[in-house]
Length: 382
Image (cartoon, rainbow, N blue to C red; front, side):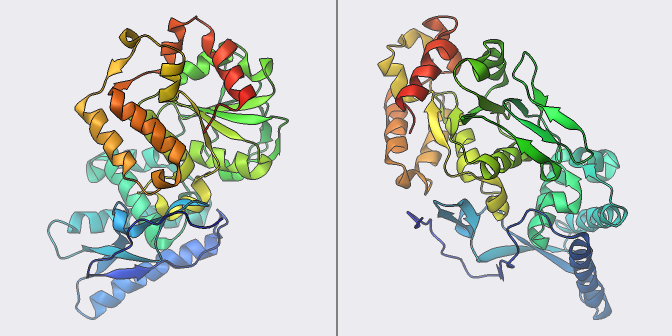
C-alpha cells in the first residue's frame, strides 16, 4: 500500500537521533537486552571517567514532529527524531536520571534471572522513591524507546484490564489451556500476549467493544453465537497495551475482519483510532500494536439521524468534546478517510453525542437483535 499522507516531519534545530533498525518481531533475545543496558551504563561510566556529567538521551515521544503516518502501519516514529537529554547535573532532571538508572538496574536483574514484574510491581517496590505510578510508566516507555526494545522483552508486563470472549482457544506460556466460550463471563486478556500459542478459532469476524457494560450486554444476549461465530474484545475504555497486542496477534493469526463498536462521541473515536492507528506516545512500537484494516461499524453519527433517535436522548457537547474533535480532525489519517471525515463533520455540526446505550430507546435488545445483525449483513461499516 502506498502512503496516503504524511504529517509534517520538519525537525527544529537540536539533538537528533536515528531510529536503530530492529527486527519487527516482538521478541528480543535476553543477551541483546543485557548488552543494550550495559552499553548505557558504559556510557555513563565513560562520562564520569572524563569528568563530564553523564546524560541519558531519550526521544521526544509525544512530539507530533517526530511522527509520520503510513496507512499500512499507522502512526510511527520518523527515522531521524528529535531528542531531549536527561542530565545528571541539572536539578530538574537529575531525579529522573537517577530513577531511570534504578529501573534499568531492576530490568537487568529480571532479564538475568528470567523473572517478570508489572509496572505496578515496580512502583510498589518503593513508592516513596518513585512518587507515582505515572512516573514509573513514563520512564519505562522512555527506556523501551531509548533501547529500541519492546517492554515485554524488558520483562516488564502491563496490568491487564481487557476482556476477550467468543470462538477462541489458546495455550498460555505456562501450558494453561484457555477456552474463551461466549457465556455470561469473559476471559481476562493474558498478561503476556507474546507467550500465547496454539491459537484456534473459527470466528468470521472480531468485534472490539469500547465499554464493558456493552460488552457484558452482548455476552448476556449470546451475540457471539447467534449471528455467526465471532471474537469479542473490550479494553474497557482506553485500551491497555496487552489488549492492543492481543488484537494485533489475532489479526496476524486469523486475518478476519475487525470491527469497532464505540460511542458516537470524540472520546469513542479517539479510542478507535488508538486500536487502528496507534498513539503518539507509543509510536515507536507501532508495528506490534496497530491494525490499520480495522473498520468503524458503529455507533456512527449518521446512524443517529437514520434511526431517528430523539434529540432528548442525545448529550450536548462540552468544550472538552469540541477541543477533542478539533484535534482528531487535524490528524494526518483523517485526510485518508473521507467517510470518517464526513461522520466527524456530522458530529461537529450537531454538537451532540450519544452512548451506545441510546439504542435501548428503540427497544431493550435493539443492539444485538437489529442494529449489529443489519450492519454486519448489509455492510454498514466505514
